Length: 309
Image 1: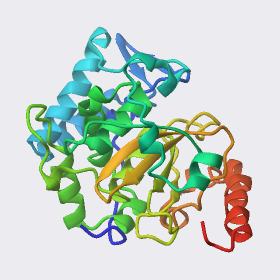
Image 2: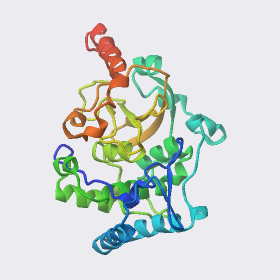
Image 3: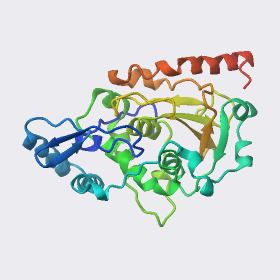
């Protein structure tokens, strides 16, 4: 699957409600009649909105129907929601079950764990490691990776279609991503075509959850295909930019496995992935500003080492 030829599809209003699995901000609630709509700006013509949802349901595939029905059920019965609030501790709160591995940290270049990486935490290497890493970041536990898949699928299948997604994702790539995300079998090892795909799914994840992900490779050459880079959301999905504590790390090791990285507070950040400036929505135009100094710090570090890091 080509990474630079990919286009993205925009979210639908019905998916926007569940934009984040990690609810760390006050969620706006509107009430129309006897129906609560959380985070959705409903037009005066409620029937038109409902017709749009029904039409979307009729046009999507079986996996999409399943995801949409789950979300509608959660709207009708909030007590059944699959969302959880992890609190401010994030990764560090799950001390009892963390898979801290000093040897794993040493898989990364020395300058990274001296300046950037605080800790490295492994996840199960069963073909779902990328989703498990995101689950660990967002929900403090990797076993909720199915929720991450569903959330990302909801993001991918949203409507109406936006220009930036048309530019970033080919029709063939969109179908492959949808097929990869539509795999929910917890009893089997995921086949390669269902893996978490670098670039394509990273942009999908950071946009769906309104977070920043720093991807670090244990291939210390920063020009490596999947080297060190930072991913920002392509658009505003939470009403505000990612905050100071919304910057998380993922490691890519051995060319086939993702791990969770705890980053040192305020650490230098590798350069922004170049596709962001080209494909981002105008609503995300200010997202870069809080991190410019940290990008500059990283580049200064590279320059001081003569590019040998």
